[in-house]
Length: 168
Image (cartoon, rainbow, N blue to C red):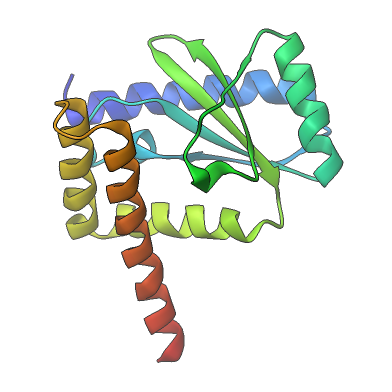
C-alpha cells in the first residue's frame, strides 16, 4: 500500500468507527479526533487507528467504557504511562485495530495530543523523525518499551518548541 492509500483507508476506518460510536453514545461525546500515526497523511506506515473520544463529563468516561465493553470492545491494559488517566478500548474494523482513547474534553493532555498531531502534520522534519522511529519498531529494531520512549522524546521536543514559542 502506498502512503496515500494507507492514510485514506485509515481515515475511512476512523470515520466509520466514529459514526458507530456516535450512533450508540452521542449524548456522552463532545468531540472526536483521529490521532496517532494513521492520522498523518505523509506517514505512510501501517498502524492502528487511534480515535480520541472527548467526553462531556468525567463520569461519562466509565459509563461509555462500560457500554462499549458490553458491545464487545476490549479494554486495553498494560499501556504506556502516557495513558494512565485515560481509558483505552480496542476493536477491529476492516483491516485495522481501532483504539478508542476516552478522556474528558477539558483535559490538558488532549491539547498536547492535538498540538503534537498538528505539528507533525505541519513539519516534514518531525514526520521523518516519527517515520524512522515507527519503521524501526515495525522492523523489530526497537522493542515496545524503546519505541514508546523514542516517541515520548519526540513529543517532548515538539512540546518544548511550543514553550519556546509562548515566550516570543
